[in-house]
Length: 286
Image (cartoon, rainbow, N blue to C red):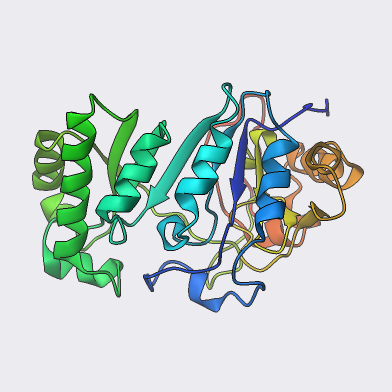
């Protein structure tokens, strides 16, 4: 498999906190330390990859707005004129100050995850998050963005669940009228969760994206919640040495052949099971 000189997207787990306890997410089971990535570490990741047109996502298995340094981190990214910034958030922590920081940074894409149009539906998926406060703060962010002449792409996303299908059309109309781009997205199941089986298919995640834990270790995939496929450590290596290193190259080559069963993490992963890979016909389970 040909080597790809640098990733197009880099995700950075700047801390390990989240204000939610969603039933479909393993975040509360994480035991990584430290609780916050040291400043010099996330700065190194960004400095190692400047002027490459990278899209940075300063979050991984955490809520990015729980990190009070987020404005500082985004401004540091913006020192590179070629860089882009994307944020996914559940929205509850979007204070006026945080909203101003994000808009001042020139965020390119921000996605609010709000999985319900009614309080009752929302409470079943975004456990621990205040529905009314989330909606209020998301609307205030939209208004602030509009007053400033826009803020890149602003999405409000609902995961497609049995409990919310009856209100999806109302949801899309409400958020569209508010100035956001409403989307309904499929629920993915994390590798190694109960009932998840392996599929003998290639993977798209490994081709363009790179992921760093709060401890500086790089992993093959953003769905690697428990460090089953570590490919390097930025505290000891240059980002591009990890990306172009033997471990990552081996994993990409194995996955290009659909041999997920040969990688511990991927041996219990069904991602892209419905995706058509051109020239690849096997859809058999391992």
